[in-house]
Length: 344
Image (cartoon, rainbow, N blue to C red; front, side):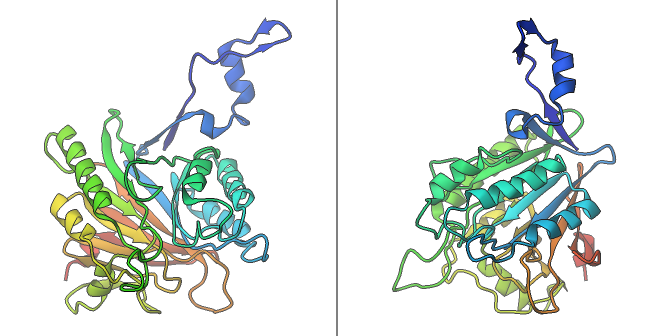
């Protein structure tokens, strides 16, 4: 459930009359912009919180590519009715992407569902808007929960808290910028990686929330775009339980700077959710952390995999979650539960 808290001091004057606050609330509720509200994420009455992950839509108005994505996302939203939408990068890949992002915001606002986004390697490759300016633009869109620490590498590093009934944080969602390409060319080529200051930022945040929670790590998930090197190691581990399919090479960084090791040591992250590789949709448990792909949400000519999204359902007060893939044809695939489904 998402609580939309209107600021009580807002009063409008029309025709020289002050409209009572309650009446104003009723008149403007349906049209009031989500970005003008305080949005608080909260577990539902059944003690669950549902997240719908979309990734790699690659919308391009100029080239007229993947424009049908918008209608297809609506289909999945109608089926799942999530509490939060998370976009994990490579969403709009054209010059001047603002209008395409506004279209996403309009769709999400129609359903009154808040959303957040982490950047992929293609989101800022246009020369017309910088990654920093794009991050600032997203924060102005209705319902977008994006924030930015600003002092560390990347432009979408922030934490969302999911509250319980006592208004206490019961779960964390780490949103992180996995950057673009190697910064050590030509010695090291390929995908980008988490820099050391980002890893230290995560460790500091994890420690702060643990301290506030009487020394107990809060259950957490992490969302970013480029898979960690451990995605490859986990898939090749014969002892690891794998659910879903690997249909292409795992495109992870050649440099491992230690983000996964930090997560294992901090003990709060239950699972990580990425995109980047359009044909992979597996989830595998590796040293206690579920490493998962979403389902690429772009249009495709191939029969498999069908466009869709990944659903993650958190459970209040428990270090557990359920997850599955929902396709636009309505099919539900690869349903499993962490940690029980991964015990041999």
